[in-house]
Length: 231
Image (cartoon, rainbow, N blue to C red; front, side, top):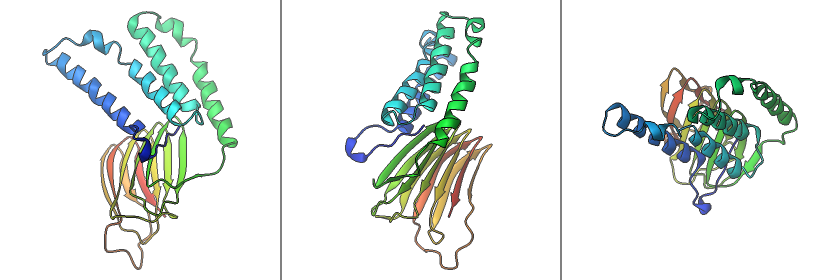
């Protein structure tokens, strides 16, 4: 599942929406644990946030990617029914084969997936959940990207792109997933990613003539996943 937006639309990216919702849940939990305000009733509706993210990703991808967002919506809906007492675990557990079916569908759809999608936007936003995204930028004024992978993977190929104002900035978030960024060998890439039980590496062979000026700054966060720079 992946979402792309153009700056001209001025829509919040899926990564921004996901981050805002996580911060919101954290604030509610903090208020409850510190005794400042009782938020237990509000936290019962926290699973609905998964549904919001799933629907946003579904609409943002223009329904090109279905399996990941639908799985996210399904998990959020089931969790919400349990939290509100409208269903029991025994009633819902019988539907677990649906996850196996969804996994199979993701494999089948992957067999018929078209080649890497080319984009010419100066800024790219990709959000992958329970799926994958492969994009190749052909922008002549590439400025940056927001790349998020949650139980999935996303790849951005910049070998056909040209950077406008250096350095371009890429924000990468990988949670139980991976983000791969493909760049020319001579580009100077600076990694400012925070890894927690994960890794951020530049796997390119050393260039004989690297650029002195920093071309791209990659920042972000990794937990149980990885961010990799390759050529």
